[in-house]
Length: 585
Ligand code: ADP
Image 1 (cartoon, rainbow, N blue to C red):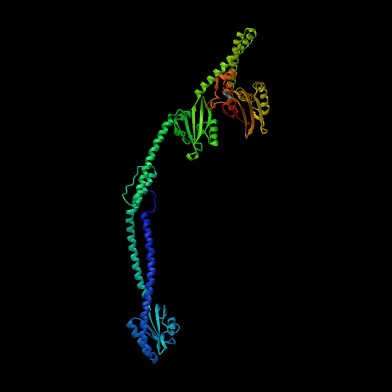
Image 2 (cartoon, rainbow, N blue to C red):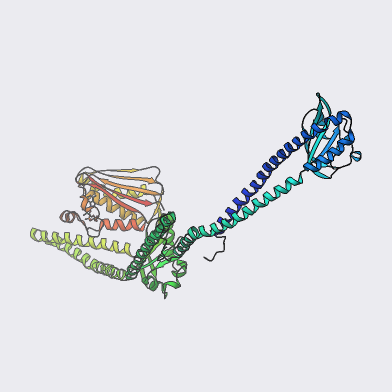
């Protein structure tokens, strides 16, 4: 691996090192202390015994005042036992010393060990000797005769001797520590062979897997945790490899599906950048390859206001939106579908070429418009002639009957032509609505006046209920009137008894208009189709009543042009309710 770092082996070694250094230091400290204690107490008891021996010997000499002999004795004994011996009179005067001339020595009455001995205790002290100029351990015992203290015998030894011995012991401890360190280093190397190398191998393999090499496998045959770990990593790599292969296959499949689509498809992310597109989209956008548009904003590739509006609307509503968009000569039905945020928050835009469809549709509507225009004049003249003939037919009831049939059918044809002309007018994109402020109450009252006779003829009552909160709305008065006329006309046509209720009320930014009758109702299976052109539920009934099958499709068109909605609720034998929702504008 390229990264420089302290390897596991060295980490392990440093830990061992730390443990060894710490234990050795503690060992040096405690062993020194204990040995020191032991050495001092040993030395002390030796010095004490020697002092006791000397005190026996000097007791008589002190009491008899034979001071010269005392000094000689001290020197002889001192040389023999290798200890410094000092004999002190109880007033502190030195009577004999194994190493110095007592006459040259100062009074020892103030020496702490001497003070202790003079108190009939065994005095001991480690201190610096001004006489021999060295650190020494002093032991002093009282010389007594019949319970009376005559003086003090003091034995002493050099303390540096102890330090010397301790230094040797410490050196040994340190050498053992060094040996332990070498063993630790060897142990680290060995354990690195045993553990670090496999860990290194696992880490190396994991790194390769991370970089996408799922064929990597670890060959460690162990039955411990490391073995289990490498088995788990191998299993993971195998699974990832499978997953990756499946994913690649799926991606390829998706690519094939996308490129075989006749629609243009582009997927954009939350920032509006292109993340995926198909071949047909590239053709629509006029670009050579996908790479040239990848990561570009969609508006750099598709410069079109309608598409921008569509994307905005998809983002705002979080729902699929469909717009008709013109690109140069071509017309597309563009669908924008949001992908949920949890799945990436992208938008799929599908462009469906409807240019041909639109052309055929236009040919069809042009044909209908032309033919209705062409039919209108001859039909009006037929009607005129039939009326004249009817007047001239006189008493010939047979002829009159035929003429009435001709007249009724001519009227029906004229109605169809009129409705078709209305529809083609509505479908004419170039024709704009003439939006005005409309007082709904006034309009509804006026329209109901037109139908008053019809209501009376059929003996149907009617009711108009407009809420006070309904103010003016903005709409095209001509088309809104057509809407009311068609719906009320149907309500009367398909109701034999009962009533027709018109309810108008405000609903937030919209106005809701409900036209309810107590008529024959519409069977459920027809409800979804009654707004289609020429769709009638009961042909003979509709013809008899002078229906064209175009009324509701005119209503639907008017509502669409006003950005409104229409729905119907109906029960056979009970009646129908048409619900119109129009924005107030
Ligand atoms: P039509 O000119 O035949 O009335 P419409 O397009 O106005 O054509 O209506 C289509 C069909 O819907 C009608 O033929 C009729 O069967 C049904 N329909 C419309 N309004 C009503 C209503 N208020 N009650 C029952 N049926 C209705």
